[in-house]
Length: 173
Image (tube, rainbow, N blue to C red; front, side):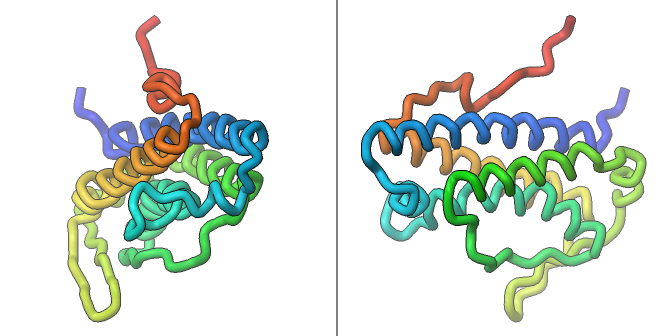
């Protein structure tokens, strides 16, 4: 049985986004227990020249649902909007993304195969087949930002393990 574009991407995005809601809960509790402000947690970085924690979470949404919206439109550009500021706003953004991803129709997604999606950043324009944009550009970015968000919390001391990252796997049975 061939794997559809939808099944190769959407369930994993939803699973990791759902997991991130748990990270956010644990991070919020950690901050309260340790007298750390939400603002400080939002600005955490692995290293000074990296973008902050809240940007990493926002980018998970951008490189999943936002990528599908870009493919639908035929063009995707970096999202320069301000990341949500605070745990409640981040949870809302992630929850809305999960809800909208859950409604993405598999047939519609398969209809996007073979179309062109342009990545546009300033004067730069790179054209992809839509499926390659999703599978190689957005999927890689999604996993980079989700791993970075997780690592930032672990670096700060939030008690997270691999199961917190992986979430509920679709096991047989």
